Length: 281
Image (cartoon, rainbow, N blue to C red; front, side):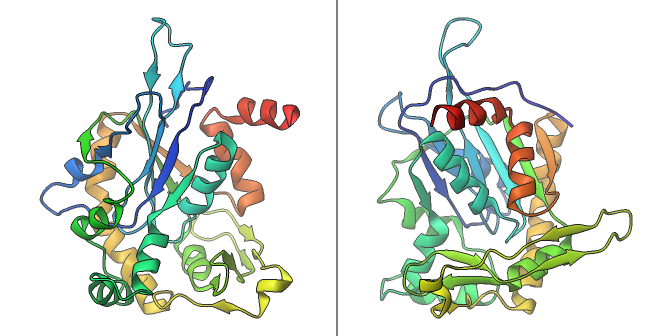
């Protein structure tokens, strides 16, 4: 697997955007590399772009660039719907001190409103279809400027056993009052077809949210399976494209957050930064 030696040494005012969208069938690469340019060159961009769920480009400035200049790196996170890209992206946001814009939340806000896109989104989301680029860029237009293409340095593909992924998706809950996400599924998967066993404890809500949990309309088994089918179909050419460039890093989630998070940090060469920040804090 390809690895990266990138280590963040100076971080200044970056932000993170999580998107739920689909690449146009005739130009998946152009959509994947379509990034938004910050107003200031000192900003570091974390951009999340996806086929059917959160895909994230992580960029930060390394002031120890060997030529003495400033290098901005772009990392993209791929993964099936429900694999946890939003969870890990928000943790990276906290670790690196980065504001977090989740476009999945923008979609849900639009769905709950009487906005011009709400009816169109309702039909798309509830059938497990993919939100189009046009809609996603409309939702983002008030938050980000017009984009330009930039080179992607590393694509991290988060992977999880399909049976575990489906069970995880069906366990997702949202607090109707505060909007925070939780998961009531207690997963214990046995070894199967060469895949190791896996345990994922539930992510339960605090007492004040327990009685206010709701299930997303699109988190039904038929819709989840349809999303996974479409995702696999649309993502294969994207994975192959970056695999041939030597830029694809496959990361198999070994379990829940407590087990996967430190290993992901190590894979991304952020473990030392995390330890230093924890010690300083």
